[in-house]
Image (cartoon, rainbow, N blue to C red; front, side, top):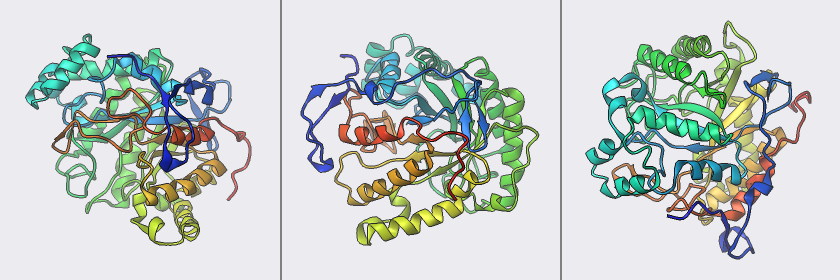
Length: 408
């Protein structure tokens, strides 16, 4: 299989007039290695020299049933890592399921056996061809190999606990939503966070850990959020004081409003970041059916009230998931993204695009499912929509100083 090539393509739906030609997308962003570890200075993420570091990340999924980072059947891991930089990203939000680090039986299964157990024969052949050094590793060692590849290629890494039981996320009834759910034992979660923080303590490019993705469901409540999220943050910091600690809110990571009047209490400082998720579908079809300018104003008002206020409190806000249908035909997504771009530019936010994956080994029972939110195409060879990537490039470089007051 040929190495990953980033192509600019004509896309009538998104208005690109480019035709097929090979281009170097790394020109969108001059990536400069930043001294690590990172910390926070008011609402900014900074390096050891006190210079601002903007997290311009892409999500790389590794939490589904196979428990292997997606795409390794399509391209060598180092080709994918290099391609991430070539597209202008400086960071990956790499997901992981809790059970990979707390269930020794699962962790010790080989990559080959995991695919075989799920009947994914074609994927085995692809992995054998593209990543022969990974296919017979244990699942936990394969995860470490992906982290090592990203680090060796100077990509910063945010480790994100996406779910407990491997599988697609998320629903209110999947047993993974909140502390005390079927697959979400708080003590086991603390154990897993501690193990991950310890395991990657020596990996300098692992700059942050996101404690839990999209807390949700009927059991969610503020009291337990403070009890366990603070405990999880302390566990991570004790095991690895070098990483930023990223806390998500309630209601699928859309609500941090409760901390407005009750700050998080931790024994450490200058390491805390909050995260929020925002998609076009978060507001149903409102973008398509109503005046998009009015919708933008209303939605941003709610967003700032529910999460954006942390900037004024002196904390970074990491938009750890956002994205659109890359085919460019989704009116709702296209209008939402116009609003998103303005907001993300105004506040010069740190962010992580959903998603890198152009396809999945197995998602929700479908083998080789196409991911239309993926920045890469189904074969993981080309950019799915180069005009989108060109637009996004505006947000990849920092353009506000870390000592400038945030507009409220």
